[in-house]
Amino acid sequence: MLMAIIPTSLPVEDPVLKFFIVLAIILLAPLLLNKLKVPHLLGLIIGGAIIGPNGLNVLPRDSSIVVTGTTGLLYIMFLAGLEIDLAEFKRNKWKSLTFGFYTFIFPFVLGILGGYYLLGFSLMTSVLFASLFSSHTLIAYPLVSKMGVAKNRAVNVTVGGTMITDIMALLVLAAIVGMAQGEVDNMFWVRMSISVLLFGAVVLFVFPIIGRWFFKKVDDKISQYIFVLAMIYLASLLAEAAGVEAIIGAFLAGLALNRLIPHTSPLMNRVDFVGNAIFIPFFLISVGMLIDFKAFIKDWETIKVALVMTGTSLSMKYVGAVVTRKTFRFTKAEAGIIFGLSSASAAATLAAVLVGFNVIISETESGEPIRLLSESVLNGSIFMILVSCTVSSFVSQRSAQKILEAESEDTVADVNTEQENILLSLHYPSTVEDMVSLMVLMKSGNKRNNFYALNVIGESDNESSEKHADKLLTTAQDLGAAADVKIVPLTRFDTNVTEGISNEVKEHKISDLVMGLEKDRGFSASFVENLYGGLLDNPNTNVIIYHAAQPISTIKRHLVVMPRNAHLEP
Image (tube, rainbow, N blue to C red; front, side, top):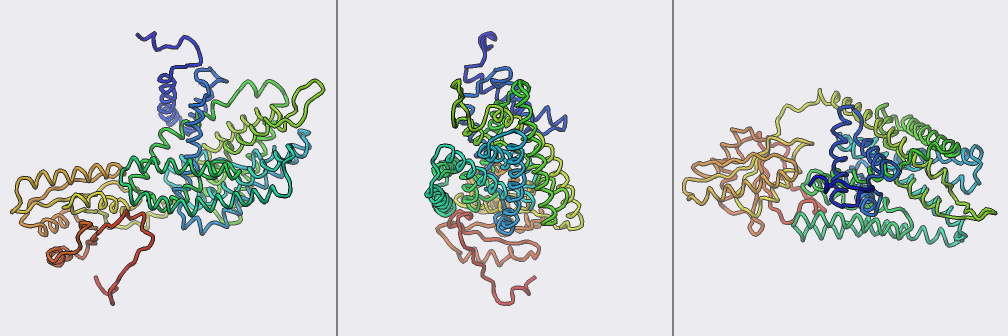
């Protein structure tokens, strides 16, 4: 039976075995490399190189790998847009623009000079050659996000700058290829500008309207996740139709849905989990499958091109990070993470080099095609991708750790001694999901403990009340688990509901009490009486009455009504 599952020839064709091999790499790479203190992202790339067609030829880089890997690339850019702090992003827009200019223009200018004078390329080829390492891919962003520094200002600036470099590099690609094929005329830039502006307007202004409507109408969690995935691909398709790379569309889709998917919500947890568990590792493995170690040493031209590309890329990306630090007075650790995130080349580089390689501008006397970008440039690009991703992973991990250490030192003297304990008082089944969602939004940072769900059974209640309580509390626990939050269920027998809630508030030192109103009912006389008859007596507890009319993330405007002299209340 064992022999039946062992392949007799390579590459493996059995889809079950192929998927198992990929999953084994995704599982084992972090476990092994974490012990060596090596970023697991690098392990996935190396694993792809070993099992790929240019390594042991265990797996082919077929359509299944390409489709899933492409989704992973789009996912990285989508998460970057989705997780970004929009308020911080707006504040740093000029910093992002400046950094994007720095990190593009330095390698671009030096790349043109190196291609023209050192490698003997034509001016047109040199310009396209320089664009290959002027852009960058946020390969290390999942690592930085996992470590908890995704909201740092330096990361924010780098993410914004990434869009600048990718757009500029892809515009260079479109222009050079168009010139090589004789397609650039006076209307070329007009058509390009109109299509890009129209695409951006649709994604940034129409997508939020569609998303807000969908999340209002559809409560099913699976449908919500599929909707998010569909919006990623739709935005990517619109980007390609506009003449830019799909990754631009994925990033803008993340920005468009940013306010509709709270960062601590169950939906965000699902989006993040599936991407980091499946799609992003597939992308890294697919990148590794492109690596051909033999090609690097088969001729001197490939080695020379690879060294020029890698040296120019890393040195100028470092210069861009240092100049950005000096310009905006970032810390040394922040400059390090800027360099780490911006040093990796993959997505736009692959797109450009493959397009340039397939453009034939003429033929030799013997009939051999003369390509816009030669095979040496193609192989040199793969070498640069491997080295730059390695550097990016190590530098990003080390710099993120330094930022975490600095932030922890800054917060030691500013620690709040008040403990956050949130209690949900559950009574109506229709309010449980909304109350848990509100609690998840209220909690501080990555806090996952000291959350309680309570149902009080009074003396006059019957036996069915216990079953009702169990159902409510189990539902709350399940919803909390979906958002990676542990909710402790509490069932209390007391003389009445008000006494039961008040006693639990005192016993567990509750800082925030959340109570829900049925959607079809407002404040009743008995509810108001209970509220003022004991629930508001504790000055150390915030009492929040939640009447959910729609998902809180879809609300555009919040009105706060405060009585006169409210600031004098204890």
